[in-house]
Image (cartoon, rainbow, N blue to C red; front, side):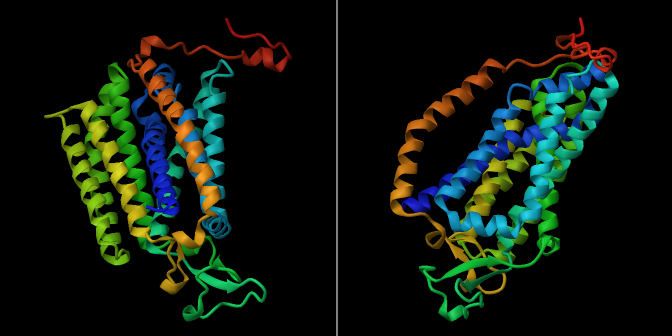
Length: 373
């Protein structure tokens, strides 16, 4: 295995970890108005992801940074052509961070309720946008190879594999990214995150919130199974030539079926259902990357215009340094992640939270910066 292929696999792993961990964060935000009745229960629901959500987002930054360093041509092509879509994802993530950080800064229920709705809206939008993006990687985008000096499109039969005098260019606007298949991808990822979040809430809460989360998890996993299966099978038959992609597809399909079965009231195994859901997400991400290989971005115009792993990768010396640094630092990161989840493994009950936190609104208006007692 070459270093470029190794880093292609590592980036897939980073996205897998991000979507498993942040997926239930999104799901909790999506379900916030539906499982939590009243200010105390909403606070209880948010507290389940309180110790983890910011650490989970680090995996997104790591995946983006690894792509920039290991595959600069891929990073440049992707961000220049999908600028608006990625900007919308960034805006939603910023609003979500603001909602989580600011909801407890003022001691009024109205303030917290407003930020909770901002949290919910952003949590619904991000998975949809991410699903559309991943579906475009599977389907292929309008990518051409142009001469750097003249800007003219190069004949597909004359594409210089070393890209010494040419570069890949993604054409088309934001709406060219929206097709029936990519919209289905957005809905599938949204449904999977919703079910994943419901299972996490059932695993991490007590009382009525837990009961409502379990009640939602059962139909949510069924919807996720139908949408994800349709998206995966459609992509496999229509846009994938790699027969090895069948392996993660089957793994994802079996895992989400198991998760669905374990979520039903007759079997209800909250922990194992969540594990099966995580395996399904891992299988789906592996399928996306397997369906792309040996390209990192497929061209829907002509296969010769596809950006391959070798074309997009950095120099061997850069990849070597990145590998050494990763080997040294990754164990430390993994130990910290496991430690944090172990330390905060207990369920969160409504009786464990206080709703009156933050600054008193009247004192803010007159400039008195005193915390509410």
